[in-house]
Amino acid sequence: MVKPFWRIGAGMERSKVNPTKTDGLTWYKDLGHHAFGEFSMAMIQANNVMEDQCQIESGPLTFNNPAVQGTFVGVYDGHGGPEASRFIADNIFPNLKKFASEDMEISEQVIRKAFAETDEDFLIAVKKQWRSNPQMASVGSCCLAGVICNGLVYIANAGDSRAVLGRSERGGMRAVQLSVEHNANLESARQELWSMHPNDPNILVMKHRMWRVKGVIQVTRSIGDAYLKRAEFNREPLLPKFRLPEHFTTPILSADPSVMVTRLRPEDEFMILASDGLWENISSQEAVDIVHNSPRQGIARRLLKAALKEAARKREMRYSDLKEILPGVRRHFHDDITVIVVYLKPQMVKTNGWASPLSVRGGYPMHSS
Amino acid sequence: MAMKKANKLTQKAMIKQILKRCSSLGKKQSNVYSEDENGHPYDVPKGHFVVYVGENRVRYVVPISFLTRPEFQVLLQQAEEEFGFDHDMGLTIPCEEVVFRSLTSMLR
Image (tube, rainbow over all chains, first blue to last red; front, top):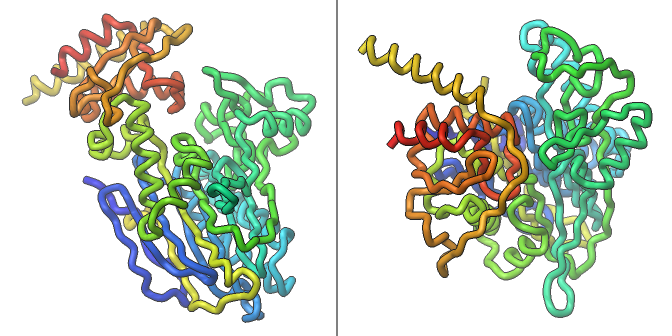
């Protein structure tokens, strides 16, 4: 049987009831309101255990200054298990608020500190259970976080999820990429790794036309993946397949995000944030065109469907048949997919809106271990 | 009942042994097929999908009911170990055709 994998506003004392729905392996929130407009979320599970997590938090972004209002959006694409992505969903927003409270504002630095703290705390948790649960050292997650505040949008990314802006132009809507991706199959990510590890000829290994860091992983930045960050985890009792043959001193993967700050313009209509499961099936421009040409209600689910239709086409089968495949084997047809569409109300861009606080979270299993 | 279980076990062991002899794949062959107006390939009936098998990546149309069979799941596991989940074109099974055929004939 299909296991539900969501919960609402987990642990958020200020959250109001915000109905979300499930339909088989799909979880969705067709339309909701954040501080500056509307949003739509959808996720689909392909792995045995849902490894993606996501959240929207809207309202105060500090604990002590109610004037700092905004919307926080997170997409966390876990690998090796769901623990790291769940940990991020539990901790990164409180961490962000903590540092924003110290600085009395949102800034690039505040967001970087929230990433660093979340990674640090996860590695501490890994160390604590090293004896009882050593495979936690091989669990990690991509982390894409967006903050809309004071007419600016901050996009911080560690991993290969992507954020795209829909900007209206004469003749249509243009996709403007807001995130920098870290995947070994991108030239920029490879150059970065080679320059950071000049003395390691095996830092990147090509296997079946795909580049992998140390031959084991495609993403070059992440939260978690302790075994690629600290040599102390590169030993027994970690399973041999995760252990690297040679000792290392510099961390191989970094949790430091690439951050892009963009001033929102009146012609900026919406943002799409999604895990790579979406982008391996539809392009940024295709996604932007779909959002531009469709009603807002259920737009995230519409993008999900477009990606699944393409996944079915690649496997030379019908979409209706793909929909019936159970999690686990389903991973051979597509990845876990998370899509969040955030509409940017143009008239709200200049001043902070004061919508009621909101907290929606997707991807949490009801029976978590 | 006990007899059945024992048979199942030896069968599984046999499959594993055969799979060990399967070779890695060389160059790939692209999948050229035609679609109808709904984007469905002409030769793939409802309830079926396509895999590419063996060194020459020979195209096979198989029922999706295979996906629930442990014997077929062993093949998928092989594919995952060999390629991960990234297949440029079509799901590729790294297994000799003759093995694939005898295995799938048991499933039908």
